[in-house]
Amino acid sequence: MIGWIVTFLVIAIIAGVLGFTGIAGVATEIAKIIFFVFLVLLVISLIANAVRGRPPL
Image (cartoon, rainbow, N blue to C red):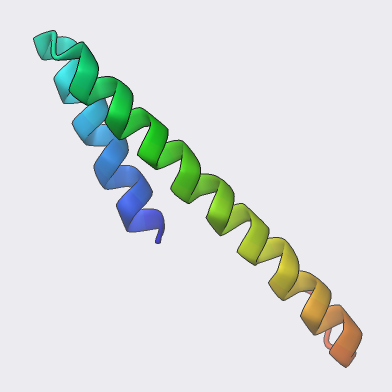
């Protein structure tokens, strides 16, 4: 999932440099959404492991 974030971030940077503001904005928003989904999944995973009695990371 982090690979997708990096991919959309690179697309946003390249599109921004080339002046494609619409594409850059869309790619940036997709990267943000995927990042926050990943962050929520990380927190859920840490809580689930703590409930099971496993130490986090």
